[in-house]
Image (cartoon, rainbow, N blue to C red; front, side, top):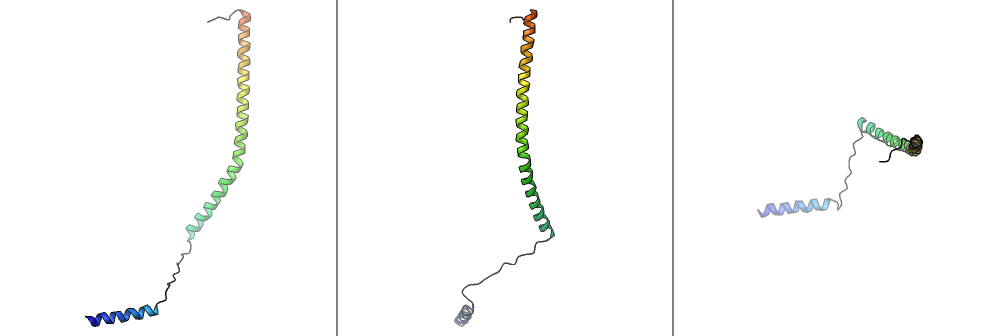
Length: 99
């Protein structure tokens, strides 16, 4: 039994002497397939498209909102004018009732 242990110890010492201190490994990188290339290009195109649409549509939306608020303000003013004119006509005709 001690013979086996001493023989095993000698083999381990031989291996320890032959192996370097640091083992370098290099990862093998698989070449991207057709699907990987297509999805990569599509992702880039979609990113650029979203950026362009954002740059183009945000100022347009802000201008639209500004015009909408202006139109609503004019509509409220017109409604007040009409109500005032109706109340004046009813008062002149004597149709105005106090509630």
